[in-house]
Length: 316
Image (cartoon, rainbow, N blue to C red; front, side, top):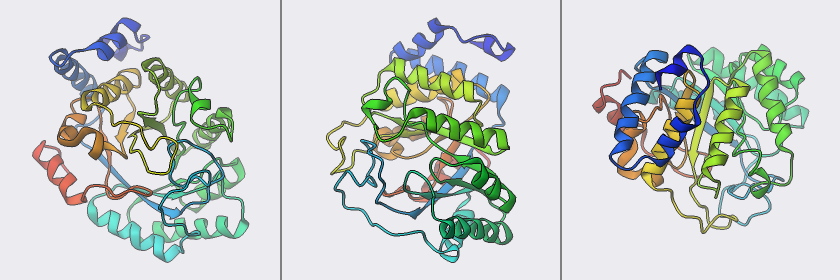
């Protein structure tokens, strides 16, 4: 596997070894993946946190999403939070150990000028009041607004592809996959730390996962967000099953192997899908973790994650 450090193309045979590894072989994979990760990344874990800054009433029909107006779910619905409310949450995230803090809003995009101005004000306020690296996830975004955000102090932009292009129409039909690609490209070209990824356990195949990993490699994103489906009552995928913990770990190793020098950040659904195996995420190739609550679901206590990382020997 070390040939990829010399810029050589990933071999499908090695990808298949990860996918098909049994419960003994997977630990051999972890050893090799860990060696590769250590040569590309420092031996630490990058922590981030998010806020659901605008919730519900999303016109998109993403099959997994509790905030879609196409679903009937029991979530809180509210308009954009004030800059002061978001700053308060940012300070909590900073105290918990987060390096990055992301402002996340529901909806296809931010269209109202007053909402754009409020987000710009929020970015400036967080920048002046904390040491956090400020990120945003505001949906499909045009270059003009991205430039405004960068001028205000935003350093990172997040926009998930969710799954592969081949499987996307099984999950969402209200916008085109190319629009997501263009948003990620624009953020990258403008100079943002770009984060993109998706959710696993949607019914996608291993080929879909490989395709998505290669798409993210082509986009040259800086960080890959890996979520595992938490089936929400009222969504189209409410009856989906949790993934096997070792399948989750193989997904992490796959994305590390194909995107060897990128940040692999584990986000929502890890608590329910991996349960007692969360510590193995870092042997499998992860070097980033989202702490605190997610958009509409509770996360694990930040102090429990910090204790886990300390027990694993990471400097936090």
